[in-house]
Amino acid sequence: MKTLHKPTERVLLILETLANADGMTLSELSLKTDISKGTIFPILKSLQYRKYISHDDRNGIYTLGISCAVLASATVEKEFWLKTINSEMHAVVTECNEVCQLGILDDAWVLYVDKVQGDQTVQLVSKVGTRLPAICSALGKALLHKHRDEEILELYPQGFPSVTARSVTNMAQLRQQLDMVAANGYAMDDREINDDTICFAVPLQQKGIILAAISVSLPSFRASDEKTQQVIRALKEAKGRIESVLNKLPDIKNY
Image 1 (spheres, one colour):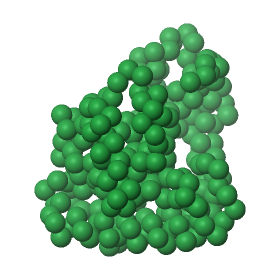
Image 2: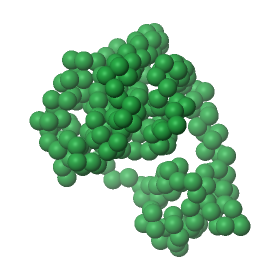
Image 3: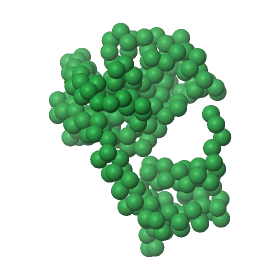
């Protein structure tokens, strides 16, 4: 991976950290990002001036600002295919009444870029903007299943990270799971990201190129055979409808 511009990295790290929190003080941000208070403070002032973050003078809490929402909205408006996917995610949730998520591959990580929630009392708690190790998640396996072994190993020079005791630990084990994605048309993680959660995912392709993946996650106690088949069927049907639209569009290089 190429060395990135450090000042820009700091700005992005601050925004990404705030995106995954309900709000943070200067001290909390400095600790979480490992950026000194003296360095981070002027960055925060600049972001606040441009309304990318907001600051509550009463409690010292920083949160994302309206400019981030404007950028996000502009991106969604521009990308017609994301609207199509979101519509189909709602259809999946209507069918299964479980959370449906959209993810893309970001190096060795899955980046969650959209989410539609069901109305079950017990639900998966997750946030758009979250990154998780690709090899441990159903979304990641759906996104990685066409990668060669050497390409995957290059993403993890320090070895495979383990999130739970059930996470994959070696390439042979992962390859077996990835081959099952190609054979069955869907990926699965069985409590590999969360000890109490099972997840199923399908890749979304345009002319054979994987662009993204959608998933359904549910607590393991609700994952009966009947429920599992319902989820897989809903995901595959949504995949078919989405790809029929994607294949009529000009080539989409990446997200």
